[in-house]
Image (cartoon, rainbow, N blue to C red; front, side, top):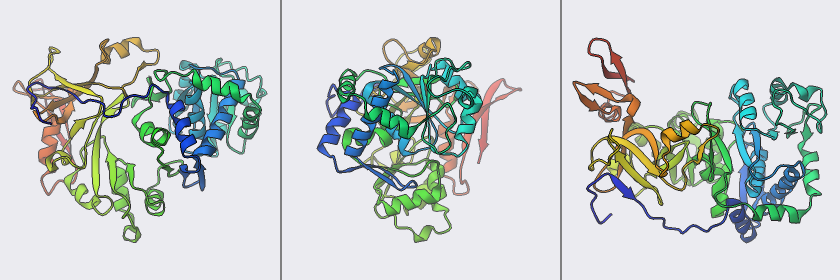
Length: 463
């Protein structure tokens, strides 16, 4: 960056111009250019799919959805682990503008039921595992045990019309995936093509649950995991390795070695788990060039140990609501060993004070950003949307941070965790960095807790 900043605002230009195409339209371009290249590898399931296979099968699935009466803007629930059927449903839906809702296995049944009701899902797809998926589904939708698949007539979730089952133990009211795919196979292909052409690049494609598991948000480009895992092959013709239906450290290590993986997203505990495998020294991680992580600081001691796995550990900064910044392997060492980031291409970042005004550089305030990856809105929650996303497009993160004269963003804590000592605002992240550098500390978290004597927030350390 040639010109030094004086105030805490930066805009990073887009290096690659927008194409004006939807993700589905771009995917079909990539698939036609690379028909025989592997797009997804499902390691645990021992399945491999080329771009042409995913193109043909996803459009067949899309034909089935259209035959069931779904249209652009309708919602489709996908419930289960990370199998081929998840990406098949996701890819089919985004091509024709149907909004996918990923419902995790570990969500309480009450949350799953609320999601089906609140988001108005017309179709739910059940994955092949776990083995009790049908039992779990029938607890939410009792009619699956008694009604026929073409007349589900749900009482609790009246919008739900069909349940597609990818497993081997369907209930009476479910459509088997094989039958559904045959339904789509016989559907007019030109109608599918027309539906794909009618999707606009601004149309929403997915609903992602926030950390509270209560309020869904809707996006036109998916969450960070979907971008880097599911969507990246669609737009960049790369290959994504799906490790397994659920997280398993041993399986992850096997994938990196056997598939010669060059990069991945991992959290701190994933790195720790691999390093602590009893047979760690038996693995060959020489292909693994970079690991993208996030969520918290990577302790210096862990970075040193993780050099046995990968050359670079890079942190990304954002939220379920959007992606704002990331580290690069060319960043200075003091940036890589902190929560320091370069704002992402096409994004704007500013640091504001309590009065909403942009602060001078290096002053702590609330981090705000706007970018093309930002969520559109919270589903059915206008007030909650307005509280964090302003009419001019700025997302107020609730995080505290600074922007320095060189354009580096540093995250130092949360507004709600700000510690006040004798009228001075103290960011927990700054204290964490000091403690983390001490050789006797293996891990640290600093939070603000109320003090009855002073009526101020004081520091509490956990290690």
